[in-house]
Length: 170
Image 1 (tube, rainbow, N blue to C red):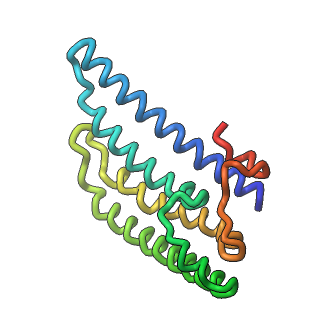
Image 2 (spheres, rainbow, N blue to C red; image 1 turned 180 degrees about the vertical axis):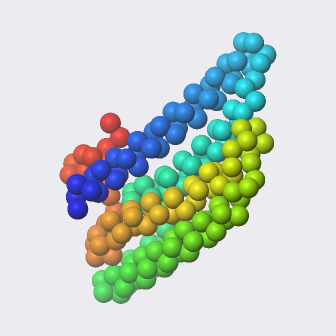
């Protein structure tokens, strides 16, 4: 299971790196061309926006894994240990249920958008809106991988942990 988790986190991390690199190159090329030649790439803003959408949904699972989402821990820390674990269990179950609903809603939405196309690139909007169900599926996998340590120990992964060399941004 650790091998799968290592591969999964690395693949997720590199997908984000590639999306950010592509977005950066497109925006840099467009700004440079506009400044140097007074010519603008017509599709650059649209593609950069859609890459940002994909980055947001793909990166949500990694943010969850490292505790990057907003959380209010004061209430649960005031409780005795068994009640803390129960609270974290309820939070994890509610988050899992929310993610499952969002996968279903995202798939429904992308199905409805399959006949509309983007203005500049003429690509089906279903490819853009596919980020939502795919991102929430990734979020579910990340949640399931960290749920045990979160519920039992209130522990999420950190980049400073020497055990997690695979999670470092080298």
